[in-house]
Image (cartoon, rainbow over all chains, first blue to last red):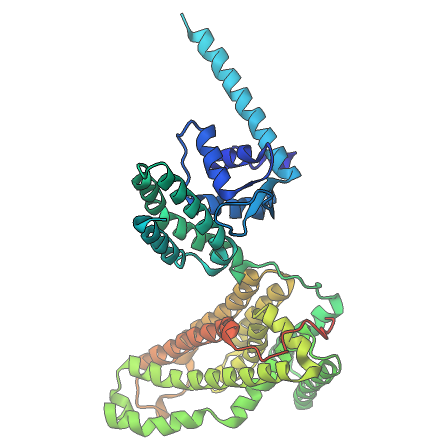
Length: 114
Length: 367
């Protein structure tokens, strides 16, 4: 658990990439679209940024590569990415941290309110 | 895809080359596929968001390329790699240290106790006997790690017998022609001239080490040593470091009252060797050797500065004692730089071509 906590807080793009993979494996382009959707269009990753982050996440063992089950229009062989057990734990831990932060922020602003 | 999309795709593909090779080979194809998907989607929706996509992709490109190169350096740089090696046993550690400890014992005995003349011979026989025994044992056990400084020591003896000072004697008339008589040479020319001896010696030592390494990798018997050196280039530095055991003999050959100086030099070398053998990271290992060699050479330089005015050299030198002090001390400091370069030179081993079918992990001798 301490190992996981030492990785927090996550940077927003990292959190969003992990979050986009929470429902199941996705290939790079699907991750790009999902990140954009999850952030209401605020975070738009370039392909270079995305694959740099993917490289780091693979290295940390938070995600792993799988064959993309969905065929694509370009007929290129694609790989998809999925969360590992460790990646899911990190995502959950970060979500808990953010939830606590938001609840503290809500209670604090409620107390301050006239 | 239409014209602009094809052009954008070509530019994208060309820019991929700027990424590190490893990153490109792993993700290059996927990146192209994703970019192509984005282009097709925009094209199908009328192309209105094309500039946004291109702006986003190319604006972050330099930063992304830079980060990947940094990442690759950080993750693949061998300088601070943990070396996966069995730690030396106490007996092996002692065997490696004997070559550094024996001169210390010898200087303590000869410097402090009035021993009869024959004991010097006994000490000499003991020293050379130990070297010969260690070399024999090392050969029998396929050159284990502890024996590397002994090989360096043998190498330097070979170099000295080969006579690198011949180059100095060949160069002397040339320098005389250019700068005139030695008495009028500027001090830095004297330092460089004196340093040439050290430089040629270390160059010959490196050439010898290169021959030895090639022998290691070509002979089946020593292929394991080559594998170890390839894994950890500081092992070759340690071999070269072993040659420095002879340096106090050369440095203080003509200097009186140098017992303490020799002791300090050998002590620094022994400490460096000890720290090297106790560490298990490339960075720590090379720092231990550099620390030992620098400590040894700088203490030799300080000794030169102190001892030279006490020498009786006026009769045979045209230079003043102060000039001699600067020249000799400067040449030792120059020698220390040459030694550091020599110890770091094995880092270039990675550029040595590997002969076909020799890159197989086989026949590794247990340390």
